[in-house]
Structures are given as structure tokens and as C-alpha cells.
Image (cartoon, rainbow, N blue to C red; front, side, top):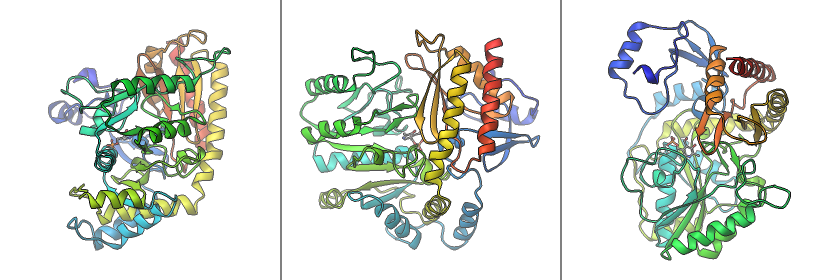
Length: 442
Ligand SMILES: Cc1ncc(COP(=O)(O)O)c(C=O)c1O
């Protein structure tokens, strides 16, 4: 077990850690050696009562901070009134949330409520297969869409080996990477159009004529905060239309205001055929949604579409979703993502000027990334320094989330709650500077 625990920080409880060692299955990440007791706002607190600034909104989800009073109130009220139902029964919170989400974007009127991100992508892919009558699914080579069957088949950034065959007809194309471009213009900048044309020529040569859908994150988060450049989504939409494929956008992390728009695709003026939402929609509670057009929903229904799960249309998480939408609207959090994001980004750019190892700062709104490199010119990822920075940050009570992909970089994903204050942003930046400084010396 020792190799999956980071060094002790003084908040050790022997029984707790021996129980972890004896009984908790390891599922990927190194466990932080601090026992978390409670959370509030932008902080989680360990058993010593020490606040840790949460710059990743839990698992990129706690959009309103932890234990937001209105979410707490909603859950307390709703759990005592109506918690869970037979899947063929509907309730007010479910229809309220479907109406609320389905009124946001013309062309995405019909809504299905589920629990997790993987599940929402599973449903989206199933829907696309049924209505197109095809089965081939294309995704980005640095994507993350979840750990279940079809979602995992379309996930290429990690965790692919050792689990047997992926779905037949799973294809990947490179994500356009402005910092480490594969195709360049004469001035060295990313030539994403040529890259996209080249990628689709390869897809066409592999396809058996059964292309059903492309699934994409507007900003690839687990892939290292790779933003689709302006114009890319429209060009991708065109590639899909030319082939009769549907475009599925997965806004698990970018949806509900995080990038400074309700949905990230709104910057690009491109509407997907199917939109999936999860993490941020429940602001930390398990809630996900699939949105599509009336025409697609009608066709799927005629063809007998089934996506029946235990927690489909559950009232308790739906009530949370309604409150999330209320708070985002009432508190002007979409605008706040822009202004707080600008403050954070400018602070990160200052760190970039100060520290050679901060090679790139990128992202939108409050979904930002810093790319840790060995040297500015070579842009070679520095995974060891990235690890040290993460550990030094945690020593200073700052939680940041590092993505480490050898070919891609050591990228910190920085995504505090939309409710983060200016003081918390400034404090986080100070701690980050100290952590980078200490990591470089160490
Ligand atoms: C973009 C994206 N889609 C889907 C998922 C999967 O969501 P879940 O873990 O809730 O199944 C994630 C999780 O990290 C994600 O980042």
C-alpha cells in the first residue's frame, strides 16, 4: 500500500491508515495522506481542522464550492419528501430540471436525467447508434469520457490497456494542440485545418461506412487542458455532416458556466446533436443529463430507444440540479467565471514569467492549466518537477490536480469553484509560487 500513499503530513491516524491498507481497494490515484473530515466553500478540512484550498473543485465538480447552503437546504427538504422512484414515474423536480435545461439552446430541447458522466456518454452513444443505424465512434486521442463500456472505448488519454477489446469501430484522431503542434504554418503556429483534414482522411480509409458519431470535449481536460481553437468545432461539425455522423459534445467539466458561457460550445456558435452534462450539473452530487433535439428524440423513440437505469429521473438529484441552475443564475456565476478566470489567468501568467518550468498557461474562464516543462525551448514535459510541485502545494494546504501524460505534459488543472473569492485566488497563487519555488530548489 505504501507506494500509493503520499508522505504523511502530521494528520496521521494509525487505525485509519491500517484500515485503508486492509480494506480499501486501490483504483488509480495516489491517496493523499490526510483524512478529510469536512468541507465548506473553497476549502476542505482535515481531522486537525486544517483548511486545504481546493483548486480542483473536488473532482472538477463542486461548482458552487462545498456544502453550499442552498444545496444543503434542498437536499434536507427533498430527502424527507421524495427521494427515489420507480423509473416509469415522473416527479416535479425532474420535469422542472428537464424544462430548465431544455429551454437553454434551440435544438437541444429533450432531456434525459442520469447519474454519472460515463453513463451520460453511454446513453449519448447508444442514441447515436440507434438513430444512425451505424456503430463507428470517433473521439480525440487524449479524450476522457468515462469508465464504462462505450464511454471507455471512446477514452484514449489513459486506462486503455489490459481490459480486453474496445468496441468494434472505435477510432481516434489527434486533438489540436497549439503548444505542441503536429502540423504547423510557416510561422510555427498550429495548422489545425490540415491536421483535421489529414485525420479524417485516415478515418475514411478505416471506416466500413458505419460512422455514427464523433464525441468531443470542447476543452480536453484530462488530456491536459487542450482547447479546441476557434473555428475548430465548426469545421468538425462540417466533417460530421458530410458523413452523416452526429456530433456529441461532452461538457462534463465545461458545462454550467465554468468557461464563462453556460456551455463552452456557445463561444463557437455550433450546436451539437447531443450534449452530455455531468460533474458541474450536480455541483458534486451524482447527476448527469443528455440533451438532444426533438427530431432525434422522436426518431429514437420510434425505433424503441431504451436507456433504463435504477436512478434515471430520480427526484433527489434533480432537485439539486434545479438549485444549481438557480444559484448559477441568481449569483451571476457565469460572468464571475470570466472575471475570476481573468484574475487567475493573469496570476498564472505572472508565474510563467517568473519560473522557467511554467511553459504554458491555457484554458478559459475557471478551467485553466499550467504545463510544466524541462525547458522553454524544447517544451519537454517535466513529470518529476510536476510531482514535486503538487506535493509542495499540498504541504502548503493547496490542492491542485496534475495530469501526467508522458507525450503530452505534466499539466496542472486549475479549476476552483465559481464561488471562489478574489482573496482565495490570490492566496492560491501565492501558495503555488511558493510550491514551484520549493520544488525547483528541491
Ligand atoms: C469530460 C468527461 N467526461 C466524462 C467523465 C466521466 O464522468 P464520471 O466519472 O462521472 O463517469 C469525465 C470524468 O472525469 C470527464 O472529465
